[in-house]
Length: 196
Image 1 (cartoon, rainbow, N blue to C red):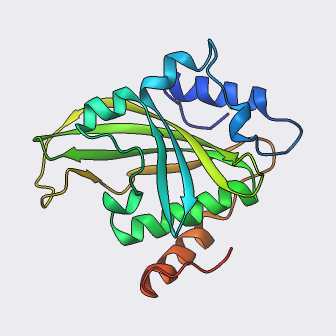
Image 2 (cartoon, rainbow, N blue to C red):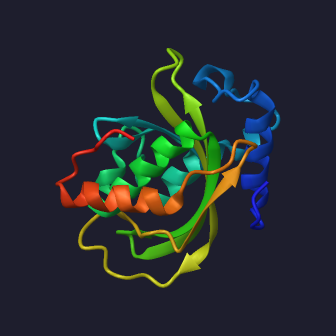
């Protein structure tokens, strides 16, 4: 488990993910199912896929949609975050699969409707059913409302993380500094994503 105290939802996601993992393999998306363990998390769950140099929300729970006032299913992370944030997220995403591990982060979501929420996001890797694509399952737990600042006309603004750490699931964790450097180089090159 993580060295940090996780919310109950994040702990439950970690426990379930560990239960579907076989040996050291990242589980397939089809193995992740609605169960008595995952059903209470579904309102705040998202599944994200790495595609076309961005992260695409393939599923967003009703709690996420209600809080954000927008269904982000099918939307790109780049629609709501700055380019450097997207580059960092992609670099970490690749690292979660290269060295299977999870993560926990805290950040602020600001909404066009005039309020903001601090959230804890915990995530673990999944593979697409063909075994080739990279996905993550996330649980986004609201921690409480926060002062609102102007979002510049975006329906949602996902602020940079105020805390981020990897969760070791038995195979170590990636080099966080190397990931940040990769992301910064990528952002400087106009978003071209070098392979990792």
